[in-house]
Image (tube, rainbow, N blue to C red):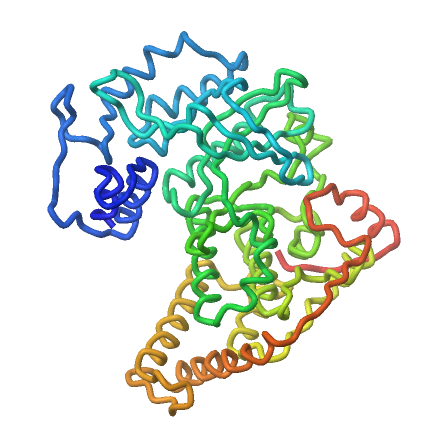
Length: 465
């Protein structure tokens, strides 16, 4: 990984790409790899050791501070947030910037969320990757493709809204490869709405990729699920919950090697993030992914995210076309009641039994019965280890199930995945037409009215806290 970083940095056998150089350096750091040459680089200016790849925090902090008077968002909360990130950045991935709107071009509509619009654009300056001592200016990745997330009715926002993005930023700092990079903020001069600028994931959301992923071998599906788990683990270990976890908030890299989580708890409109007691009990989200206790207006917990994860597990089994859960039903108060009463997606044929058992634990009605994120990581990691070892030792798929050093339970689990892989070959030949109910919604929306309607009809269901 460090050698790859060096190749991209010095254009050895490839074009110079500072972004990829830093990416592979940080991947090595995240994987606890040791720089093979144990190289120590010194800052050309202060002669102190770099705090990170091509980054001197002491010198760069001064450079940012000198520029504070050259820009303003005209919002004290945004200015303070951005300035704090620049003063404390230990590497280039921790920088946020106020990005002038006129630095964005080729702005094209891309998608719509529940309370925001998504556009693609080209950022002419591009993100910072280090300091150029010869030119005395920032090294940047010019003409960089980005995503613009415009929040409706956001011309006057407060610190509460920025708190949500501070949570996201803190997770990004802890594991840059599991969260889509947040570059900064701008403002549309026409309607004054604020815009979050983020890295562009070419494959788009997990939902858009399901038709491909569903055809993957089980060991590859499990690897993707593990990467999702590791991202969620960063959130939970930060004493946070996602709060809007569904396949639209998971993005895919162009080669499916990486997944990125976005929008921690950002399913709410700007108006609901204002300081108002009347907003406290309002419910927002994508109904099929919401845990029963949330629909009963209980607080979000890490167990609520685990329930949402169970729906993603189910999607990975959902047939050759790949569909989200409950696509054929109206997402109304009747559906909400059925979830209270235990309704879950139908189990799909040829799904390994051990996988079904884990999925059912994740969608258990009682939050306390659901596994933790650590338990999920351990179970799925062990499945991956056993399956990969089997195929390593048994190149012929018709060979017996010989695998040393595993117990009977692990052997049975491994056999179920191997048999399920064989069934995939036949399933790939089948095609299905996906039909959605006209009242099936897969973007975040306000659900309070549905909840109130359910309550007025006298439905009641006890859910354990």
